[in-house]
Image (tube, rainbow, N blue to C red; front, side, top):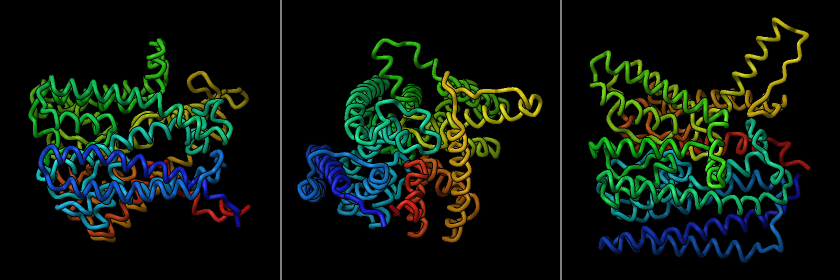
Length: 484
């Protein structure tokens, strides 16, 4: 068996819990300002979380944190599982208290930026709970950006080694590198959130609503404080603002750092961004044309609602401006496909990710060309860099396992009593960290409250797997991982 030093793992988890405890001060203040009694819930939850966080840090202090490959795999999964439990405490303790199962689901949904809710109605929740849901998405978003840029390339998961930088080549640099990069991304993330809040206020959204929706738009989490999501406001300006910032949240944050440094062409030079923008525009305009031709909406409304909802699903945010399930079978099938796509690598969005589709297309095109010119050397490049065979194999393996897991989770959900439509869409939306499904019960104006506990736990696992890029979790199930 593997001899493993767990002190660095527990220390980092303790640090994350301490940060989570401090974050609970925001909803506590919100409840105090509103005169809501639930402020005590956050006081108790914060105290418990801080106690265990500090305890773990004190008991596992080391001179320096140097994580091996195995330790990093374990930490990535363990941190998410443990932090979600403590993040669920306010949902369990509040006046509208959820069960342990539903509370953990709500926390997992927030921190993985999925945006699926176990609450039957959210409009009656106290301001502290509403803000906590949004804050979990926001915190999860910045954690995901850091993980996608620093940790996953080091772990060589699903072709992510393609984005590996020289500074992340050594395992003992993972934590310092993550801290430095998180600071830079954090400032960009904070600035974009502030700009989004101001923009929503100028568009006519109330301040508290603007704060919540800005955090969940940039985090591409989709938690809303209204039961009918963004459709509640019936405000075109609000919808266009959120469309923009959902899209910005799904772009690689490393490119924003380049923009700040004056490299204004870095966005369009990135192949996945070019493909992503073109794909999104074509799909949105195509859907808008369909809605106009079928006399479902006027031209202006069709363009607005098409772009908003297509961007919402592609970016895996999950906001809705109306119930798009009423648009017919064609758009429903389209939205299911968009559920699989996802945004760009190094962003807050989930899904398979655009760069993997590009790698698959390049590999397919190269293979077809070799059929006609078997002796010709056809190097495969991406963003001007050669793509190694292990990257292609990793991408293909990831995509295969991703589709296989959707089918497996769909079967498991079907065994809990869900019909085919609900089961397959719930599996896809959980694994892709999207939020709303395609069935009436879990659709854009629905929620996951009616699901049985077994289905809720299955979806929580699917959200975790999807957010951690599958193999980060699955590798822990391999006996060889635990051998010397």
